[in-house]
Amino acid sequence: MLEQRLAWAITGSGHFLSESLALLAQLKNVDVFLSRAAAEIIKQYGYQAQLDAMGHKIYQDKTASSVPVELFYEGKYHTLVVAPATSNTIAKMAYGFSDSLVTNLYAQAGKTRVPSIIFACDTVPESEDFSLESVAPRDNIVKVFPRKIDLENVAKLATFEHTKIAESFSCLQEALFTRLAEVRSRVDTKNA
Image (tube, rainbow, N blue to C red):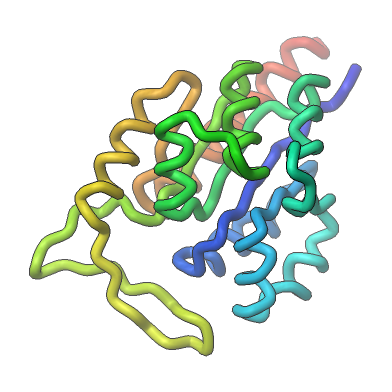
């Protein structure tokens, strides 16, 4: 019997990248998929050695047809996580675009009914009194105000089948560990 794995896609966001990588480092049986921007930003932020040391199989967005998505057709994955997900990726997924490795992974996960957990960076409503603080390259702290369109795209994506939106990092952790427990329980039941 094929042991299913977790597919984890990273987009080009520096916001919550460090936290996402720290969570990823705790996991086993994971394949990591990097968008072109993610491959650049991981190096720019100095996280390449950390990612390599995890020992996960890493796929990069280097083919026009996103060849690695065929692994979903083979039943290799039980869950797709996209974390962190940029507003660009969220917009594309919300409108059905599958023109990159990450958006194609999400589309194929949906078509094969593999649950997806999406951690959108822009989920906190903008107000004059509140902003998100994000770490930019060279450890600069910047204030980020999600735009109305970003929030609308997240809300639209939340209505998709087999999709769970994590609105905070703690929600991502909770959704991920709940899903992994479900998968373990299903495997234990089959093996009993």
